Image (cartoon, rainbow, N blue to C red; front, top):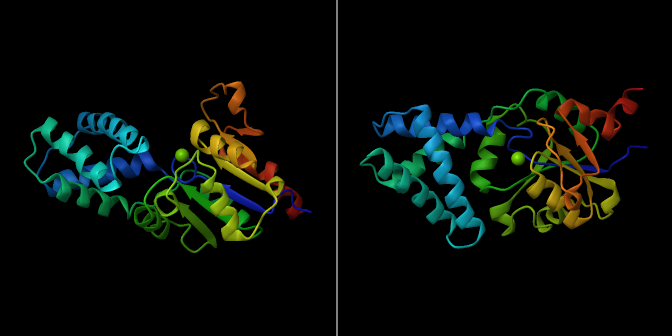
Length: 234
Ligand SMILES: [Mg+2]
C-alpha cells in the first residue's frame, strides 16, 4: 500500500527555477524599455521586491499596487523613464512563459503523477504560475495547482493545503505529504493543516523546534524513498 494518497508540493525553488525565470523576465523587460540590464540591477530589484512583498504580505497594498510599486521604485533608482505599470506588464508577460524546471524535478514528477494525485501549492498569481506550468515540461502531466491569489490566503495559511486536499478529494491528513523549500511557508502551512511535512533543505540549515519537519531531504530524488516509489517498482 502506498504511504501517501496525495503529494502537495511547492513550485518555486522546489520544482521550478524561479531565480532564473525572474532574471530572464527582468532582463527582457529592461530590453523592451531600452534600459541597461546588469547583475546590479537584478540585485537592486530583488532587494526592492522583498520589501514590497513584505508590505503585500502585511496586507498594506494590493497585488496590482505591488506590481506597480516595485517597478516604480526600480525605475526611479536606475533612472528609467518608462511607466512602471507598462514595465510590470512586460515583466509578468515574460515571467509567465518561463517554465524551466530544477534538476531532477521532471523525472520525479513523471513517476509520482502516474501513481498518486499531485497538487502544486504556490504563493503567487494564478495566471503567471499557470502560464509557467503550461510552458514547462510538466505541462502534460496530470497535476493540479492551487495559487494563493485564488484562495485569498497564502502559505503558511493552512487554507492553501485544505484547498489542495479538497481538489483531490482527500480528507485524511495523515495520508497527505507537503514538500517545499521554505520552512516558514511550506512547513509552516503543513503543520498548521496537520499534514505530513517534508523540507527540501539543500543548504542543511537548522530548523527551530516549533518548525521541525517530519522529513528532510537535500535533493528532490530523495523524495522517492519517502513516498515509497521504490516499492511500486518492485
Ligand atoms: Mg519555494
